[in-house]
Length: 100
Length: 376
Length: 164
Image (cartoon, rainbow over all chains, first blue to last red; front, side):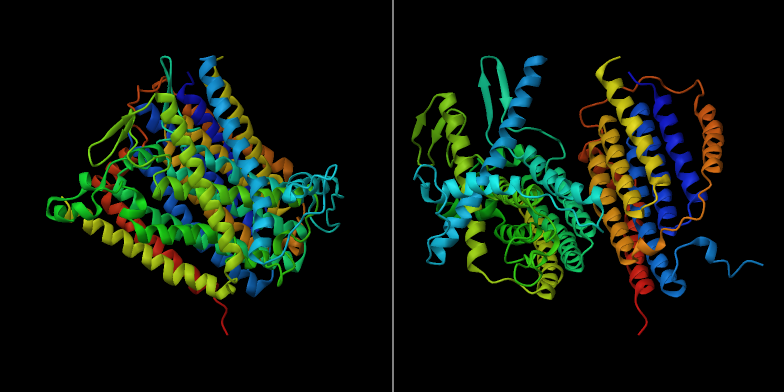
């Protein structure tokens, strides 16, 4: 039987990869995709705990995380579209108007 | 353990084989059937030693050979990997969706009972919708990888149409799920064996002589849902009258214009496999699946009291045959629909999906809920 | 090593490879497809963890709708012109990943975690259980989630409209 640790380690690794994606990529859409990857790693943790502790609360939490992630992806993409229309670029390095 | 695995593998191979073979035969029925409808002869030139078999040799042997031997052309500015991946992504959901459709009741051999359904999932019909939503990828990626404006137009139209009608499909099925109270397709098929007079509430018993002798099929309990589901499913699989994404006369074959040879055959086979899957779903949800009216586990039990007992294997064979007959009927119906009805314009397609099917499906759900509460 | 462990290790390896591909591929469409495969792998992991309902929701909602939306936006914004990646800091990224994993992994290796799953009833993770929970204990978040989705739809339409 697979101990719970392995699922948590897998989840932590995928989360770390997602964080790296947010930090080093210079394309807004890929950054958003890395955020989705992080959310999914967390979902995996929820489901693993829900199974090993025997309670359905984890699955309900994943349900809500999915709904919120959907809403966030939609709004994020709409923002990216309007930013692209103004700046003609998806590089976060070029959006530094508010920097001192 | 090994025997269980062998049985499951056999069922899976049987189902995939049947779907693919039926897809091929449907190609032939389409060509000859359309020829009959349009008062012409159809393909009859290819022959082996003078035997042309009404176009069978042409469609089932010559055409696939031609497709397989064509040059595999990948647009030089397109994406090589995605161009090859897209037909696989289009064919895969079409084939695996049939795994949850039951083609018979339980078969008892010795002490082993085999459920005649490849995968008995407790989420049943949600699996079908999940695979349906994966079907969009074949279109989107296929259009993108061709690097061609016509492909792109066809692909965007096709995927927008598919995701719009997924919603209508899901909502129209909800009424059926509420009536039968389960998501599993085998249970839905089984519950359609009851007679309507056993399901009627007491204040409707006076209707019992008129409709009580009918089996409790989905078409009698949810007629509106049948119409909505059939329309949405035909639109989802992008068959005529909803095939503007492939628009043969407008868009030069739309999203699969840059595909030739084996890849086009995969798109083509995927489309026919989807026709078979839609027919299977309609049969299971609305027409009793493998149920023969009045046939129970041990024989016929007619509503006027007579019985006719039959051996078990014979009953199972009868039920599988009934399922196959209904499947072929609905495949034929979709082909007939293709060659009789003109194609919708794209804004009409979108209007139908969002402004007509969706509110009607919601209305159906509310009406079913009210009816179920009133019947208690 | 029994089949369950074998399947888990296979899925875990593929998932890590898929997430690496998401972060490190140059072509945005390829990244999106790698993310789709990662999502499908996670859905399979959900099913192995006795959560078939959530697994199929993952395929329907995440892989089937959200990622299609991503692909639409990518194609709308025509990434052929946007692929100049001036120096991805590969080494820096790898170091960051190792540091973060190095912090998180010992954190989860505590000893008071159950090593074996609690024996599951047949209904665990089925639609009935999830629905019972959602509509009795969590009915308020459920309704609020529907309002949230409505707000998201309206917001997206308003934000993405062209001003003519």
